[in-house]
Image (tube, rainbow, N blue to C red):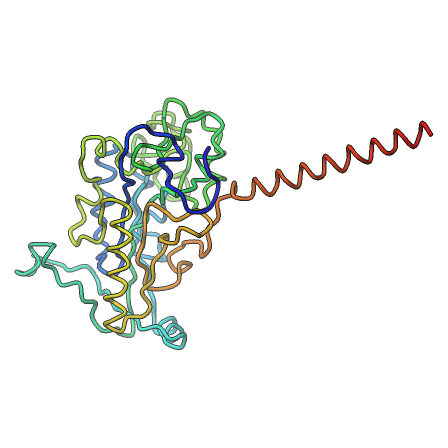
Length: 333
């Protein structure tokens, strides 16, 4: 299991003999356009079934809703009106209007993502915050720590992967994830749901039905020294991939750049190795509070409290043994 909390190298904890640097994502939400290319690329590469019938949620232009067993990358559309913008301004943040995705051919100077202008425009009375969410591949992964079958394992790249042929579908990992990422698969495109109400019906023909599923950070691509499908497909370089430490440094530089432009609402999520999960392999640049994006503000892996629980249990056992011994000796006297 390795270290349960605090800063550490997860690959070292897993006792891999190969010296591979930890890999990870940096998702810069300030330049995400909500195109969902990452969602499509993820599904195509991993042969993941469709979620539901792709109808809009009604509360958003989104049609998938959240991460799940069949959606390993999810792009959220967070719409904010004047009231929320006013509240944010009152809290001292400078806001940014990301605009809607461009319709039509790309601008002449946007053919090369490396040359794209990443300067956010001025804030208007309405804005969209778009964010491509994914498994965090935590330094201390709750799903991995509580799995009773060994179906989840830590790869040589520091990521966490589910082995389909070992998972028994018990769901313990679902409860162990503080982000609500991992889920058991129960539906898909083999038999498309006719409405959102029946999309959770059981369909036995669905691949890996009943098995826990989540992002693998394209482990099969990593072993061949390839970029994960989602990062490869992202047209704006919102999703960046590389060595974890380099991604964190890139994220910090981006935040500093936005702050220098007066966009003080930019902050990092998952880059603090002293948080409740020891930092995450997937680091995010956010433009509002984590709760706005559906992320826990202070994630904590459940197993972090095990040492304290064991100590308290040991003291309780010792106290009970001492009380029993005193009662026995007192009875003999």
